[in-house]
Amino acid sequence: MASAAVLAGTVSEMTESAPATQPKGNDQQTIYGTEVQYASYPSLVDRSVFITGGADGIGSGLVEQFALQGAKVGFADRQTDKAASTIERCVASNPRHTPEFYDVDLQDIEALRAALTQAEASLGEIEVLVNNAASDDRHTWQEMTVDYWNDRLNTNLRHYFFAIQAVAPGMIRSGGGSIINIGSSSYMMQEDFFPGYAIAKSGVEGITRTMARTLGVDNVRVNTVLPGWVATERQLSKWWSPEGEEGTLRDQALKRRIYPPEFAQMVLFLAADDGGACTAQEFLVDGGRR
Ligand SMILES: NC(=O)c1ccc[n+]([C@@H]2O[C@H](COP(=O)([O-])OP(=O)(O)OC[C@H]3O[C@@H](n4cnc5c(N)ncnc54)[C@H](O)[C@@H]3O)[C@@H](O)[C@H]2O)c1
Image (tube, rainbow, N blue to C red; front, side, top):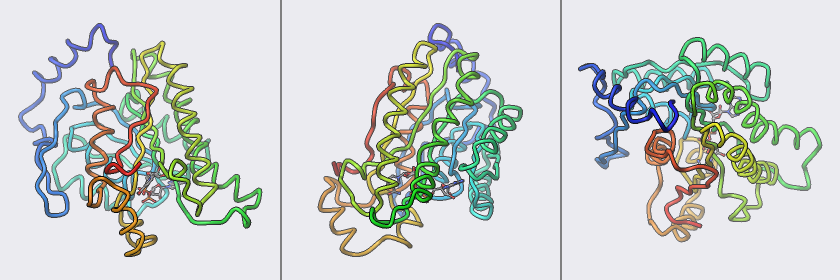
């Protein structure tokens, strides 16, 4: 990503040089039976993007949506089968670049660092980082142990910081970058069935605001995007209940489910030059729930 002074030139160069085989883009998609039209971002073509937790759920949707934009995508996860399915779905739309998978347990910071080094060698310096991987397993405050506390923080917060630490030098060298941390409105809603998760998620916004100020001087933007309830396979198979959904829809202004591809649109905007003046912010994509 270039500094503001050369952005215009970069955009027109990308537009002019885009080959005829460039994927159709993100303009027309079907989301669970409804046809929608989304923006295509010229600045995302060939942009190198790294996504954690990209094998399943929202992360898998992000991998697909960035691939549709013509971005070079690397993603880390520990679910190899699901990662293969994500790549298969991407390949079906004939992307400009096939996403690359890195088999990593994100609790292992050395493994994460190694994957990012490999991704940079393959994709070029990372211009967009999406910290997304997390786990919302249910637990009570009474059963919390020190080991489980560490597990929750290491799964839901620690790798966010160390991924930023690893990619920021390259972003600074390239004149800028965009880091998008996926948060959760669960702690704002005072949800009480996963304290280790909700507490870690409140820290995501601390990382965003602190690092946005630290890295802003080098044109690196850092934002949080917070889902409300996004209907992923895991949510529907593990946590869904008629009463739960009824309560969510009662709270939301929009009386329908939110799906991963539509959540991804806010992330695309922040990753593209179009979001170039946005940093240190929280953006809710929750159907008007909070
Ligand atoms: N779906 C929702 O309704 C919802 C609501 C609020 C916040 N979120 C946030 O959105 C993001 C994505 O959530 P989701 O619903 O898609 O979750 P998900 O469980 O469907 O997907 C998370 C992905 O992260 C991976 N992952 C988790 N821990 C990992 C580890 N240690 N190493 C490697 N990979 C790991 C999983 O394998 C999985 O592929 C998370 O940050 C979550 O907190 C989701």
